[in-house]
Amino acid sequence: MPPLQIILLLYLLGIFPGDHLASSLPLQRRDLFAVKVAPLDMALTSFDDQYKGCVEMMAAELEELNRTEFANNWVYAEAWQEAASRWHEKKDSLLPPGGLKPEYGIALMAYTIQGRFHQDFNKAVREAGRTRDSYLNHFHFKAFHFLLTRALRALRTTAEPRCQKVFRGVRGVRFVSERLKPVRFGQFTSSSLKNGSALQFGKDTFFTIETCHGVNIKNYSFFPGEEEVLVPPFEKFKVVNFTKAPDTTFIHLRSLEDSSIYNCVFVKERRCKTQRCSFGTDGSLSHWSANVQTPFLLWGFLLFAGAFGTPGLL
Image 1 (tube, rainbow, N blue to C red):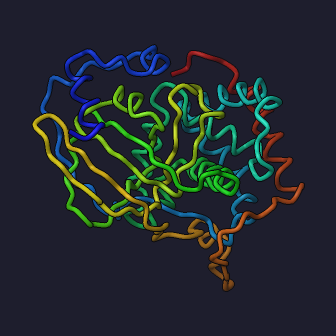
Image 2: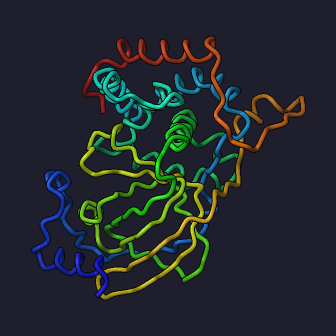
Protein backbone atom coordinates (compact mmCIF):
# COMPACT_ATOMS: atom_id res chain seq x y z
CA MET A 1 0.00 0.00 0.00
CA PRO A 2 1.45 3.45 -0.88
CA PRO A 3 2.75 5.48 2.12
CA LEU A 4 0.05 8.16 1.93
CA GLN A 5 -2.72 5.57 2.01
CA ILE A 6 -1.08 3.91 5.04
CA ILE A 7 -0.90 7.26 6.85
CA LEU A 8 -4.53 7.98 6.04
CA LEU A 9 -5.62 4.53 7.27
CA LEU A 10 -3.82 5.09 10.58
CA TYR A 11 -5.41 8.50 10.84
CA LEU A 12 -8.90 7.10 10.24
CA LEU A 13 -8.30 4.46 12.93
CA GLY A 14 -7.36 7.20 15.36
CA ILE A 15 -3.77 6.06 15.95
CA PHE A 16 -1.91 8.51 13.71
CA PRO A 17 -0.40 11.18 15.99
CA GLY A 18 -0.13 13.91 13.37
CA ASP A 19 1.91 17.08 13.77
CA HIS A 20 1.99 18.51 17.30
CA LEU A 21 1.62 22.13 16.24
CA ALA A 22 -1.13 21.40 13.76
CA SER A 23 -2.94 19.22 16.28
CA SER A 24 -2.95 22.07 18.78
CA LEU A 25 -5.28 24.05 16.51
CA PRO A 26 -9.04 23.68 16.93
CA LEU A 27 -10.33 21.04 14.54
CA GLN A 28 -13.79 21.08 13.05
CA ARG A 29 -16.01 18.06 13.56
CA ARG A 30 -16.87 16.05 10.50
CA ASP A 31 -19.83 17.52 8.64
CA LEU A 32 -23.00 15.57 9.40
CA PHE A 33 -24.49 16.45 6.02
CA ALA A 34 -23.71 14.75 2.73
CA VAL A 35 -20.30 15.47 1.25
CA LYS A 36 -20.54 17.60 -1.89
CA VAL A 37 -19.19 16.45 -5.24
CA ALA A 38 -17.48 19.14 -7.33
CA PRO A 39 -15.53 19.14 -10.59
CA LEU A 40 -11.82 19.91 -10.61
CA ASP A 41 -11.31 21.73 -13.90
CA MET A 42 -9.69 24.88 -15.31
CA ALA A 43 -11.76 27.15 -13.03
CA LEU A 44 -12.66 29.50 -15.87
CA THR A 45 -14.67 31.86 -13.64
CA SER A 46 -11.63 32.61 -11.49
CA PHE A 47 -9.96 36.03 -11.51
CA ASP A 48 -6.37 35.12 -12.32
CA ASP A 49 -4.60 38.40 -13.16
CA GLN A 50 -0.80 38.30 -12.77
CA TYR A 51 -0.35 42.04 -13.50
CA LYS A 52 2.37 41.42 -16.04
CA GLY A 53 3.80 44.69 -17.27
CA CYS A 54 1.57 46.98 -15.18
CA VAL A 55 2.90 46.63 -11.63
CA GLU A 56 3.81 50.30 -11.15
CA MET A 57 0.57 51.54 -12.70
CA MET A 58 -1.49 49.22 -10.49
CA ALA A 59 0.51 50.30 -7.45
CA ALA A 60 -0.42 53.91 -8.14
CA GLU A 61 -4.10 52.96 -7.77
CA LEU A 62 -3.73 51.23 -4.41
CA GLU A 63 -4.35 54.10 -2.03
CA GLU A 64 -7.76 54.93 -3.44
CA LEU A 65 -8.68 51.26 -3.87
CA ASN A 66 -7.71 50.30 -0.35
CA ARG A 67 -9.52 53.25 1.21
CA THR A 68 -12.75 52.20 -0.47
CA GLU A 69 -12.35 48.47 0.16
CA PHE A 70 -11.44 48.88 3.83
CA ALA A 71 -14.35 51.23 4.44
CA ASN A 72 -16.84 48.72 3.04
CA ASN A 73 -15.42 45.54 4.59
CA TRP A 74 -14.69 45.37 8.32
CA VAL A 75 -13.51 41.77 8.10
CA TYR A 76 -10.84 42.83 5.63
CA ALA A 77 -9.94 45.98 7.58
CA GLU A 78 -9.50 44.21 10.89
CA ALA A 79 -7.51 41.36 9.31
CA TRP A 80 -5.15 43.92 7.78
CA GLN A 81 -4.84 45.79 11.08
CA GLU A 82 -3.93 42.62 12.96
CA ALA A 83 -1.46 41.59 10.26
CA ALA A 84 0.16 45.04 10.22
CA SER A 85 0.69 44.84 13.98
CA ARG A 86 2.28 41.40 13.64
CA TRP A 87 4.51 42.62 10.81
CA HIS A 88 5.84 45.46 13.00
CA GLU A 89 6.61 42.95 15.75
CA LYS A 90 8.43 40.46 13.51
CA LYS A 91 9.87 42.43 10.58
CA ASP A 92 13.37 42.84 12.03
CA SER A 93 13.76 39.08 12.52
CA LEU A 94 12.25 37.97 9.20
CA LEU A 95 15.03 39.06 6.81
CA PRO A 96 12.66 39.11 3.81
CA PRO A 97 14.10 39.06 0.28
CA GLY A 98 14.64 42.44 -1.33
CA GLY A 99 11.56 42.23 -3.54
CA LEU A 100 9.19 41.56 -0.64
CA LYS A 101 7.86 44.98 0.30
CA PRO A 102 6.19 45.54 3.70
CA GLU A 103 2.72 45.67 2.16
CA TYR A 104 3.38 42.30 0.51
CA GLY A 105 4.41 40.75 3.82
CA ILE A 106 1.35 42.16 5.58
CA ALA A 107 -0.89 40.71 2.87
CA LEU A 108 0.63 37.26 3.45
CA MET A 109 0.06 37.53 7.18
CA ALA A 110 -3.50 38.77 6.74
CA TYR A 111 -4.27 35.77 4.55
CA THR A 112 -3.21 33.32 7.26
CA ILE A 113 -5.21 34.86 10.12
CA GLN A 114 -7.67 32.51 11.80
CA GLY A 115 -11.21 33.43 10.78
CA ARG A 116 -13.35 34.07 7.74
CA PHE A 117 -11.26 36.64 5.85
CA HIS A 118 -9.37 34.20 3.60
CA GLN A 119 -12.62 32.30 2.98
CA ASP A 120 -14.48 35.45 1.92
CA PHE A 121 -11.57 36.47 -0.26
CA ASN A 122 -11.21 33.12 -2.04
CA LYS A 123 -14.95 32.82 -2.59
CA ALA A 124 -14.83 36.17 -4.38
CA VAL A 125 -11.71 35.21 -6.38
CA ARG A 126 -13.40 32.04 -7.67
CA GLU A 127 -16.25 34.07 -9.20
CA ALA A 128 -14.72 37.45 -10.08
CA GLY A 129 -13.43 36.23 -13.45
CA ARG A 130 -16.86 35.29 -14.74
CA THR A 131 -16.94 38.59 -16.69
CA ARG A 132 -14.95 41.83 -16.71
CA ASP A 133 -17.91 43.50 -15.05
CA SER A 134 -17.84 40.90 -12.26
CA TYR A 135 -14.31 42.00 -11.43
CA LEU A 136 -14.62 45.73 -12.04
CA ASN A 137 -17.91 46.33 -10.23
CA HIS A 138 -18.44 43.42 -7.85
CA PHE A 139 -14.99 42.28 -6.68
CA HIS A 140 -14.02 44.22 -3.56
CA PHE A 141 -10.57 42.76 -2.95
CA LYS A 142 -8.72 44.34 -5.88
CA ALA A 143 -5.89 45.78 -3.80
CA PHE A 144 -5.47 42.63 -1.71
CA HIS A 145 -5.47 40.37 -4.80
CA PHE A 146 -2.70 42.48 -6.32
CA LEU A 147 -0.61 42.54 -3.14
CA LEU A 148 -0.92 38.80 -2.50
CA THR A 149 -0.12 37.96 -6.12
CA ARG A 150 2.98 40.15 -6.04
CA ALA A 151 4.01 38.74 -2.65
CA LEU A 152 4.11 35.22 -4.04
CA ARG A 153 6.03 36.43 -7.07
CA ALA A 154 8.60 38.19 -4.88
CA LEU A 155 9.17 35.12 -2.70
CA ARG A 156 9.33 32.79 -5.69
CA THR A 157 12.25 34.67 -7.25
CA THR A 158 14.49 33.57 -4.36
CA ALA A 159 12.81 30.26 -3.49
CA GLU A 160 14.90 27.09 -3.44
CA PRO A 161 13.94 24.57 -4.60
CA ARG A 162 11.74 26.17 -7.25
CA CYS A 163 9.39 23.15 -7.40
CA GLN A 164 8.27 21.15 -4.37
CA LYS A 165 5.86 18.41 -3.34
CA VAL A 166 3.08 19.48 -0.99
CA PHE A 167 -0.17 18.09 0.37
CA ARG A 168 -3.72 19.39 0.81
CA GLY A 169 -6.61 17.85 2.70
CA VAL A 170 -10.19 18.93 2.02
CA ARG A 171 -13.23 18.38 4.24
CA GLY A 172 -16.76 18.30 2.84
CA VAL A 173 -15.95 18.07 -0.89
CA ARG A 174 -15.12 15.08 -3.08
CA PHE A 175 -13.48 16.48 -6.19
CA VAL A 176 -13.99 14.73 -9.51
CA SER A 177 -11.51 14.82 -12.37
CA GLU A 178 -9.78 12.63 -14.95
CA ARG A 179 -6.23 11.43 -15.40
CA LEU A 180 -4.13 13.69 -17.70
CA LYS A 181 -6.73 16.47 -17.56
CA PRO A 182 -5.43 20.08 -17.17
CA VAL A 183 -6.79 21.77 -14.05
CA ARG A 184 -6.38 24.85 -11.86
CA PHE A 185 -7.53 25.52 -8.31
CA GLY A 186 -8.79 28.97 -9.33
CA GLN A 187 -8.10 30.46 -5.89
CA PHE A 188 -5.17 30.98 -3.56
CA THR A 189 -4.81 27.46 -2.25
CA SER A 190 -3.19 26.49 1.04
CA SER A 191 -1.14 23.31 1.18
CA SER A 192 1.51 21.90 3.50
CA LEU A 193 4.95 20.35 3.24
CA LYS A 194 3.72 17.88 5.89
CA ASN A 195 1.10 15.32 4.91
CA GLY A 196 0.15 14.96 8.58
CA SER A 197 -0.66 18.67 8.83
CA ALA A 198 -2.70 18.51 5.62
CA LEU A 199 -4.78 15.64 7.01
CA GLN A 200 -5.88 17.81 9.93
CA PHE A 201 -7.89 19.93 7.50
CA GLY A 202 -9.86 17.10 5.89
CA LYS A 203 -9.75 13.72 4.22
CA ASP A 204 -12.71 13.69 1.84
CA THR A 205 -10.25 14.70 -0.89
CA PHE A 206 -6.51 14.41 -0.39
CA PHE A 207 -4.16 16.11 -2.85
CA THR A 208 -0.52 15.43 -3.56
CA ILE A 209 0.66 18.49 -5.47
CA GLU A 210 3.91 19.05 -7.34
CA THR A 211 3.89 22.84 -7.53
CA CYS A 212 6.37 25.17 -9.22
CA HIS A 213 4.53 28.43 -8.49
CA GLY A 214 3.48 27.76 -4.91
CA VAL A 215 5.65 29.42 -2.27
CA ASN A 216 6.53 28.52 1.31
CA ILE A 217 5.03 31.26 3.50
CA LYS A 218 5.91 29.75 6.89
CA ASN A 219 7.81 32.85 8.01
CA TYR A 220 4.81 35.07 7.26
CA SER A 221 2.11 32.87 8.75
CA PHE A 222 0.24 33.14 12.05
CA PHE A 223 0.59 29.32 12.19
CA PRO A 224 4.18 28.51 11.13
CA GLY A 225 3.86 24.93 12.35
CA GLU A 226 1.60 24.16 9.39
CA GLU A 227 4.57 24.61 6.98
CA GLU A 228 2.18 26.30 4.56
CA VAL A 229 2.87 26.57 0.85
CA LEU A 230 0.45 28.93 -0.93
CA VAL A 231 -0.45 28.05 -4.53
CA PRO A 232 -1.70 30.88 -6.80
CA PRO A 233 -4.97 30.61 -8.78
CA PHE A 234 -3.21 30.75 -12.15
CA GLU A 235 -1.00 27.66 -11.81
CA LYS A 236 -2.06 24.93 -14.24
CA PHE A 237 -1.56 21.27 -13.37
CA LYS A 238 -1.89 17.90 -15.03
CA VAL A 239 -3.83 15.22 -13.17
CA VAL A 240 -1.24 12.46 -12.78
CA ASN A 241 -3.49 10.13 -10.84
CA PHE A 242 -7.11 10.08 -9.68
CA THR A 243 -8.22 7.36 -7.27
CA LYS A 244 -11.59 7.00 -5.53
CA ALA A 245 -11.60 5.08 -2.26
CA PRO A 246 -14.70 4.54 -0.09
CA ASP A 247 -14.01 7.52 2.17
CA THR A 248 -11.36 9.50 0.32
CA THR A 249 -10.54 10.67 -3.19
CA PHE A 250 -6.80 10.81 -3.87
CA ILE A 251 -5.63 13.27 -6.54
CA HIS A 252 -2.03 13.71 -7.66
CA LEU A 253 -1.26 16.93 -9.57
CA ARG A 254 1.91 17.97 -11.42
CA SER A 255 2.63 21.57 -12.41
CA LEU A 256 2.56 22.44 -16.10
CA GLU A 257 2.79 26.24 -16.37
CA ASP A 258 1.10 29.47 -15.38
CA SER A 259 -2.16 30.12 -17.20
CA SER A 260 -4.15 33.37 -16.92
CA ILE A 261 -7.16 34.66 -18.81
CA TYR A 262 -6.89 38.21 -17.48
CA ASN A 263 -4.04 40.71 -17.34
CA CYS A 264 -4.00 44.28 -16.01
CA VAL A 265 -7.80 44.58 -16.13
CA PHE A 266 -8.13 47.43 -13.65
CA VAL A 267 -5.35 49.49 -15.22
CA LYS A 268 -6.84 49.03 -18.68
CA GLU A 269 -10.19 50.26 -17.42
CA ARG A 270 -8.74 53.31 -15.68
CA ARG A 271 -6.00 54.35 -18.10
CA CYS A 272 -6.48 52.80 -21.51
CA LYS A 273 -9.89 53.96 -22.70
CA THR A 274 -8.56 57.01 -24.52
CA GLN A 275 -5.04 55.85 -25.28
CA ARG A 276 -3.41 52.63 -26.34
CA CYS A 277 -1.64 50.72 -23.60
CA SER A 278 1.10 48.17 -24.09
CA PHE A 279 1.90 45.74 -21.32
CA GLY A 280 4.93 43.49 -21.17
CA THR A 281 4.53 39.78 -20.61
CA ASP A 282 7.76 38.88 -18.84
CA GLY A 283 6.23 39.40 -15.42
CA SER A 284 9.50 40.70 -14.00
CA LEU A 285 9.39 42.57 -10.72
CA SER A 286 9.00 46.32 -11.04
CA HIS A 287 10.31 48.72 -8.43
CA TRP A 288 7.78 51.17 -7.07
CA SER A 289 8.92 54.75 -7.09
CA ALA A 290 9.13 56.44 -3.70
CA ASN A 291 6.23 58.78 -4.42
CA VAL A 292 3.99 55.75 -4.97
CA GLN A 293 5.14 53.44 -2.21
CA THR A 294 5.51 55.85 0.71
CA PRO A 295 2.03 57.48 0.64
CA PHE A 296 0.39 54.06 0.43
CA LEU A 297 2.30 52.70 3.40
CA LEU A 298 1.85 55.82 5.53
CA TRP A 299 -1.82 56.03 4.67
CA GLY A 300 -2.42 52.37 5.47
CA PHE A 301 -0.58 52.30 8.79
CA LEU A 302 -1.90 55.65 10.05
CA LEU A 303 -5.42 54.68 9.06
CA PHE A 304 -5.38 51.70 11.39
CA ALA A 305 -3.95 53.70 14.26
CA GLY A 306 -7.04 55.91 14.03
CA ALA A 307 -10.39 55.21 12.46
CA PHE A 308 -10.11 51.43 12.36
CA GLY A 309 -8.62 51.08 15.82
CA THR A 310 -11.95 50.46 17.53
CA PRO A 311 -12.52 46.72 18.12
CA GLY A 312 -15.73 44.78 18.30
CA LEU A 313 -17.56 46.13 15.28
CA LEU A 314 -18.08 42.80 13.53
